[in-house]
Length: 412
Image 1 (cartoon, helix red, strand yellow):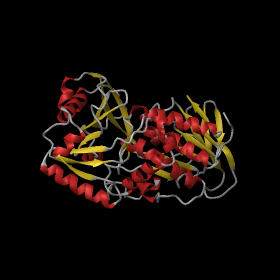
Image 2 (tube, helix red, strand yellow):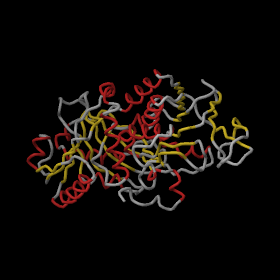
Image 3 (cartoon, one colour):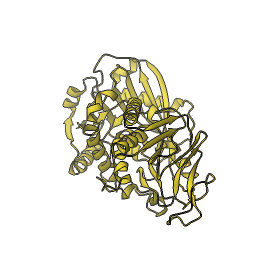
Image 4 (tube, helix red, strand yellow):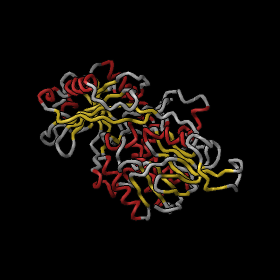
């Protein structure tokens, strides 16, 4: 493992991989470390959503629109590698009241540049012939897309390696190197001095310690997903990133185009925005290239408990059948769980941490991390190299949790 780098990325999921790729494009020498495998955490348990449809107007929607542009333009030439599919999102309202609320949301999103059009009940069935006939109407979001997250992480890291990046899996960061002996804002001191886990807040971060050696770098990016809070703790700073468990059902293979879009109920947006620790369930149904159908989505805060939840699985099945009654006779092959990195205000943490200069964060994207990864990675690379960022990173600043404003809803 190299002794020095310009940037150490902690985390080999989709966010870390995107940051590594864009950083190498910017000319930085990059080392990526992960205690597990590539896409071994949240990235390996997601559905691959690249959505604008489920975001209320506000900073997250702006990031989603920007990231969708990056997926299509900067990463477009590689789309086939990770099964990028512009399938579009179809949001279904079951009642006139739900349709009215969806219409209001769509109008607000449209004002912010989202492409969306209302569809009648009859058109819903033309778009999705197997959809329930009970739906009152819906909205079509043609910008929504899907990728295979594990392929994204693997291929982006492969591209980064071609530009000189070093990737080390099975390599846990156990501490940070800190500049000691001087105030955090001044130079000098011992740039290679280790600091005990949880100590040394304020001293500049100058690299990482692992069981396999140290890597010195002027910048370290915390892209550790649901473990980002623990990684930040090694630097003596608090980052309220919590695991939010979700289950996904996978059906047996079905004929092509059984489900043509990403289809979800209109109340899914409310479930995403909820801060309730108890089980939240709202149906999301989409097909895959292999013929299987993925069924989500549940949310609950139960720590890192990965045990199967019969209540969650029943809620998934019930919701999916409500959208597509034909699924009642389809067998489920498996169910799996993952943990979304949740922040109290439902916004990711992106940018430098003033409490530990040299430490950067790209985490806390909750269930939107795959879709937001491309934009996050590009923004991080811009900021690291001193460029003006394409988006203002202020709403995502790590210090916001100490300023009393982190409990505001994400759409404000």
